[in-house]
Length: 383
Image (cartoon, rainbow, N blue to C red):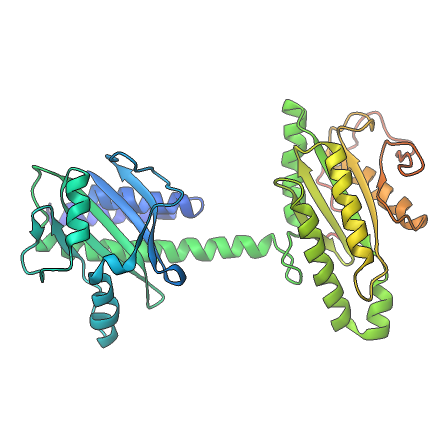
């Protein structure tokens, strides 16, 4: 491959990773780009999980052998099986050396390699019908992150020293792409996360609720919303200080997350101030009410606090057509206000009647949505 073609390949790899939406797409773009750049038939990207002492395969691309998957759930290999990893990490790099790539073949060590390090890779090449591979360590933030692996089938030209040098360059480009992806994901996480509790924030709820209502309109999915107000926060702040109030919010956030785990895929969020919510898509309304009841019980046991006022609204209950996120939120909020006014120890559920389930309706509910209702509902604690 000429220098111009290799430059084009590097640019294509970098562009592919830059265009990725999320880590999985970035991993795949890295492996595909490296495979094409090196003229391989197969490529994999693996991460070194230090705490587990293993290399975990993130993605496989190209001609997959039996048992290989594009995004494997649990394909991993103990690091001690690959002594060259230890050599590169602790001997060469510790002295300021560069993490150069190397070549292995199905026939044994490539030219210039010390014997005895490659038996596991040689066995893997033979088992999967591959003739050679080039392995390039990936370094991120000055530490070993993982490796880039590209292979060719039996009968194809064996990788040369120049290919290994080029793989080293590709690994550096991949490292830069991974770092950029991690920065973007962290920015997205912060944009949709409440800083104090670590739960989702109001912005995340707005987005997910709009998507959930669209799914409800499209295929009838059950959408349920639990809105709750933590009682006694102002008293705690005034009496014990805001640090104690923050601890109460954090502990209630943990309780909310725990109860949310009763509902597969539920989103636990802090809307702002002392107001929280659970958004569930799919579980039956009775399951959501049960989780809300458990939330009330656990909240009542928290030190310092005065329990929680909890309102529930679900499209599965008789609350009329739900064509907007705003309507469901208003019903859940109205139920929560009633629970607070009545000092209810259990959730108040919109649309249900009975001693434990007071009916909650919206007064003067319009027959058509107003312009304001078509806008995303922001609520009382909107940023």
